[in-house]
Image (cartoon, rainbow, N blue to C red; front, top):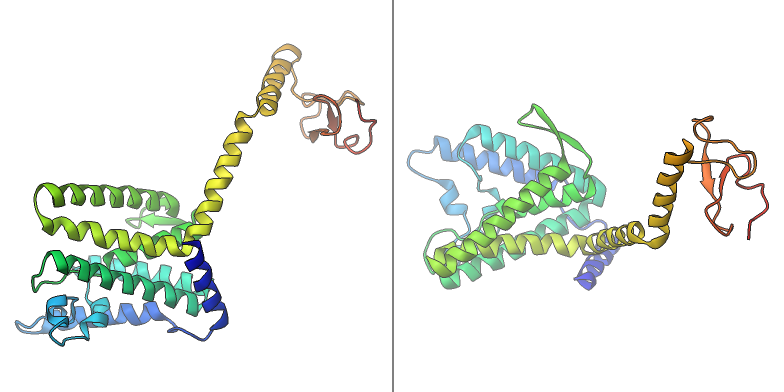
Length: 293
């Protein structure tokens, strides 16, 4: 996974002009046009001609390999408008953050994995209907955005302020539940539930390819913080601090001048790592004292 990520990073670095500028704008406009044509056509659905259907692709309708990205995810005008605006916004932010080349590679890789998922599903369900959509690819786009901007605040339902990371965790929980439910349904009830297993896993794979190093670094940081909190030195320090506050009425006291955090609440106190023991010093003496051995 790490090797693939680094190879893609090198490719994007060496080919900065690769890609489609304003790719999300192209996709959003395409979705809007297809929705309008679907609504005003009499008995003819353009979406059915553009959707991803391996049955027809294998019979020569190869344009479906690309055009299904323009098939709207909803027939409701309000839901479609909200989703298109949201994905255009996060897509534009990611393109500015990554550059056109990397963002295009991310979306094209998600598209390719989605196509593979569609054909895998078709192997088990050889019916003419569509077997893939861009729903999960767009969700992986949102996970990428939440990873880069976890503390960005958005208005849920245009009313409730909430940080993007909490929405991402909620989506991840629903994602996991959907996969597990579809997996159980596949083995217990019907193979048609396979759609809810393969497509999400491919979308997650696309996300992991681009954020593997970041996730591993984050896990390592959490592990180090946990080890630090559980270390003997930290535990002893907390116990000593609590005992000092309970018995003496203050937490920090300078070992040179005797200042305490109670008498000088705005003073900055630090502990010297070179002294043998927990010796505290004020800002004046932290760098100006004889080390106690």
